[in-house]
Every structure is written in C-alpha cells, then in structure tokens.
Image (tube, rainbow, N blue to C red):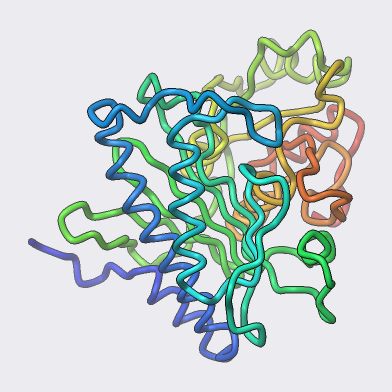
Length: 335
C-alpha cells in the first residue's frame, strides 16, 4: 500500500511540539494514542452498527436527562478503558457520568481529560456524521482534594481533539498554537496528515444553526439572522448537520460560523457543555486562527461553576464571529 512519505502522524506532531517539554511529552503521547485507538474502535463499530444491532436506544437517561444510545455507552466504556490503561490520566469527566472518575496513574505527570464520547448520537439511526470530543488539562497546582475541584480549577486546555466519523474518519488535534487534521487509513490503521497547520479560511460564507429555534432567541440575534439572510453582501448559505463536530469541521475547512445561542425557556444558559463541548471547540478554533464566544465573552475565559455547566456557543472564522458580536451589541475586544 502506497504511503506518501510527506505524511505524518499524531505521534510526530506531539514529538515535534514537545521538544522542550519532556515532562508532558509522555502523558500526551499516551493520551493521544488512546484517542486514536478509541477512534479506530468506534469507527469500526459505527460502520457495522446496524448489523450488530447496536444503533438503538439503551432505554436509560444520563445525568443530563438525555436519552442514552447503546453506542453512547460503548463509547464511554471504550475511551474510559483506554484512558485507564494508559496510566497517564488522573481523572476523566464525561457527559455520560455524573461525577469525574479518578484513574490509576503516575500522579507526578498525569493530566485531566474531559470528553463527550459520542457527540451527535441522535444521528446514529440515520447514518449521519457524529463525533467524539476531548479536552486535556493540566491539574491545578496544588491539586484539589476532590475530582470535581480538579476540573473547576483547571486552566485553559493543554490539548484538544475531536474525532469525526463520516465518509472517512478524521482526527483533529489542537496543541501548542497549531491545529492539524489527520485521516484514518483503514488499511493500515494509522491516522495520517500532511504535517501542515490548518487555519480557518479568511472569508467564510457558511452559517450553521437550527433555525427552528429562532422564535426563542433574543431580538438582537433574530435581527442578525434576518440580516445575513436578506441584506448581507455577500450573502451566506445555511448548512446544518445537527452534530457539533460535523458542523464545526465543515466550517473549519470551508470557513463559516456555528451558532447555538441561549434560548428562552429551558436553555437560557445555552445547551452545550462548557468543559467537553464548547471549551475544546474554542481551543481548536483559537489554534486554527478562529475565535469562540458565548455571545458576550471569549469561551476560553469562562471559569466553570459546575462540571456539567452549559453555555451558548458561537464559534468560527474571525471575521464572521466579530461581525456577529458587532451586530448583536457585544463587540469582542482584544481578539
């Protein structure tokens, strides 16, 4: 099987970026390898899901009150098991668990992982794109005595990643000022990329949001959406998959803005979870030359109040997010 000699792996990326950070090199390599292996496992299961009878509901609800799919459970068990065996993770916070779980590890060099093991699982039954999302944090110093406190007192992510399961399986890593995109070679099992940093295109024209919720938005947001549809020049086009990873990935490659603002009613604080959805996407965007906001402030400056805290999320190309902020009355300074 031909392999382009210019292609590199996530291992190469981490090695390159940790030449002066030997202490964190090993845990980052082990955690990234666990994410890769989990991605291979989940990609294989998703391809065969209907044949294995694992694409339906597990008939339970998680701590968020959401219906759990069988593959949600499998994703949770798969990644948690791999992180446990890596011995590089002090604690894992997951969408599928009420509290963070402490793992056996080398406490001197271990890191924290927050994850959504299967994002967009409502897309499973219709064979639409879904993903897995991860944020890796340094433990606060001195470390909190409680697992919950570790995540509430952690700083911005050290490394963020997502897997996208679609026509091909992609792994996107953000670390040390760069975002890189890798593709799973199903013949060799390797994730390969061309070694170049990925940047949001300067002039995007895609907006991604669920317009069915428009009546629940605040008036400035309704006016903004009306403006981009009727008056903005050049005009924009709507593309919406309904899975954060899928919508973000398209906008990363093509240029665009993703919006899930606060709503009247049950989602006045937003829908997406800060630590394992909004924060990793904001970190990936920042490393790719984009920005993310909750509508008023940079996502990466928000101090979490709880491990499952929800926030609004607007993320994408710099020009489009700044334009959104200016049109809705909250211009971002310093970004």
